[in-house]
Amino acid sequence: SQQGEEDPQALSIQEGENATMNCSYKTSINNLQWYRQNSGRGLVHLILIRSNEREKHSGRLRVTLDTSKKSSSLLITASRAADTASYFCATDGDTGGFKTIFGAGTRLFVKA
Amino acid sequence: ETGVTQTPRHLVMGMTNKKSLKCEQHLGHNAMYWYKQSAKKPLELMFVYNFKEQTENNSVPSRFSPECPNSSHLFLHLHTLQPEDSALYLCASSQGSSGRSQETQYFGPGTRLLVL
View 1: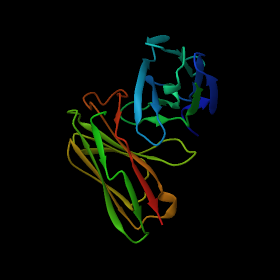
View 2: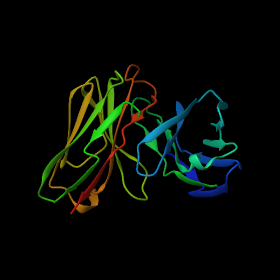
View 3: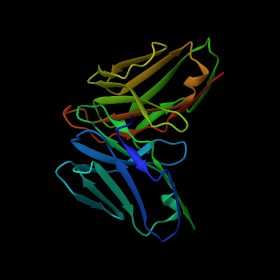
């Protein structure tokens, strides 16, 4: 089964609201990353959090990591219509190296 | 622009055709990746090259043949594909210096492939 599983699969909110997406994984990891993908385009890296970190911020993004629960969350504050996209978490499993395992993603729709 | 380009952006091919996808990165990276993204399925890693050497082959059928002539270019040669191979094929690159920990990847815009 997939290493990263995002929850919810889809999320629809109003502009200005906060959006929270969750990711669960199964094996130990060295780090976890979040990516964004606009419809039919390539992925864009948002943030990387290492296994020894618990929280990280980047602009309106806040990522948490709970290795005991094997889960991470991505919070987007004060969302904008331009945040409409799919969001994926990615892990290296327990192998490290270049093998990257992506989850199925959360589709976020921000209504103006 | 991420510094990773892919051509063509769209491709329609028959099951007996041979075609190639091209990826080029202008970031000075040493690792390059091919991914397949099908509808309603997670992104699937296909191949990884680091310093022109293949380091990952995720049990990809032989009708997909990668080629990495140098650290800036990556090809995916396609032959006798099946309709279920229709997908968005994404190329990515990363620094490639450590090889021990997952690196930030920079993606191209993808090639939308339709196999008839």
